[in-house]
Length: 404
Length: 225
Image (cartoon, rainbow over all chains, first blue to last red; front, side, top):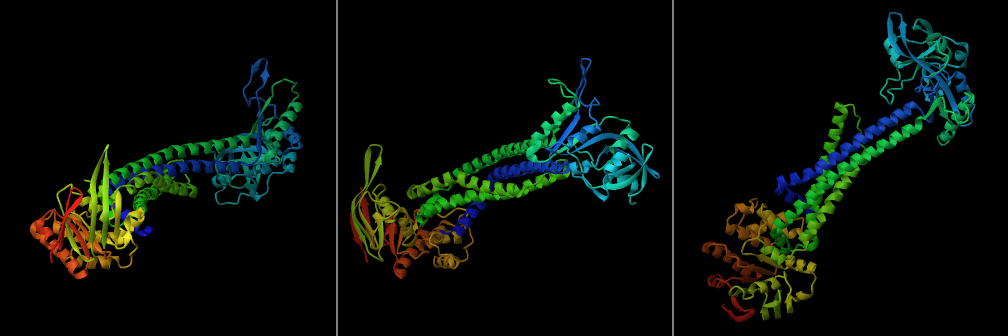
């Protein structure tokens, strides 16, 4: 028997019992839709993370002032003033370190003509551009002369441009930050949201020296961002940061660090690994329902084989060979599971789109998950359809014909 | 056409052996119309199953149209059932929820006759007087009409032998005569060999030869012209 008529026969068999076929398929539909949706949620989270990581920059180490002990009382992280701009300068001389940028952060009220806006203000050096991989779209970045000469030049993020300049060209304009006039020398490229959901473009960057003395009146920095030379040198870079800073801060052997070093790349890699595990878990849980759907198919096919014993006898009497019968029931099971699979895929894509549309979760249906589900449902049909089909094919035609 | 030599069929039930056929010798020639009669348990159904290639004898040999059947594989037997034999049963044995046309087409699915399947099925239904009911489901047809569909199905692959197992058992006498007329016509006009199992003497009288079975043996074999 050729495969095409077999498929025709199978479809006819399923159409004859629409309700039952539909319910059997429902198991597969739900299973596949669940797998697709869960993988889409996981994949969406992974993509979001990957995008955030890309926007942060690569091979990053963050150094922040650490806990110190003064008079027996240990202070919390970030409360001390141990990091100074020259620490960053010194770090740039280390072999595993590509660049280091000191940062002071604060908020400022920005005024331009009749408009004003409250935004984040950060003082840093020219290295920051390289570390964050964050060039300007117009004008120039802050350079060494700005920092050394304590110029009142500044860079603005795209959100700030939108809020206080509107359609005007910001380059060369004078704005006031906390009453201090600054000249806009560059506009930063759009960076988007950070991993924490903050708008990274709502920022003004000034030379480190100007921010420290004119804006915030500080002698220490909030953090130093360090970029390692390469992925493989990261552990080495962390070591160099620690050793050098201990030396510079004159911490005796055995004393506690007065700073903390965080390997951001490592943390992000860990977060990515977690997302992957979450995706796998979600997929595994969802595929259990697919398995249950497969058992449903086997159950119904067994019932169907028993119920159609006489039909099997008739087919054998008119010349069906064992393999014709086997193929017929196997194809029926596969048609059931594949039709269910296709409907499930459509439904899963629909669910994923709805989730992205109506919640803050991003989802992404990958071609891989679609192919996987399709192949998996075909496999479920073959696997769970084989036993009932073999049972049908092995029937004795005489007793099958007499079956009541 | 049908040549049975010393056919024996034994069934083992528990620790007793039941001998359903006890050395049957029978020759039915091409174009014969034979009725097989006998009480239930006489072995006539067992004999028909073997003749119909649905079962194999325990010993003895059965030659169908020159082919020693008892040596063939299951697939080869299926092929013989498909091409050389046509079955008509007491209970009609049509596929439920399937149209008359599709029932008649069924045997052609198993031998690759695809191109002209529908025309042939139409022609077969016409030859048994069922034109116009091709799209009726079997449940929408009367018993006589269902049996006609079954005969059309048996005829579709131009068999040399039609095996009819109590074909009128579920029909009233008027319809029975109509069905038997079809068999007579097929035998007379197309020269198809017909082997008929029945226990009704007036149905058997349509056949030109009547063979009586009892206790697994042939007890009488008479011919009329």
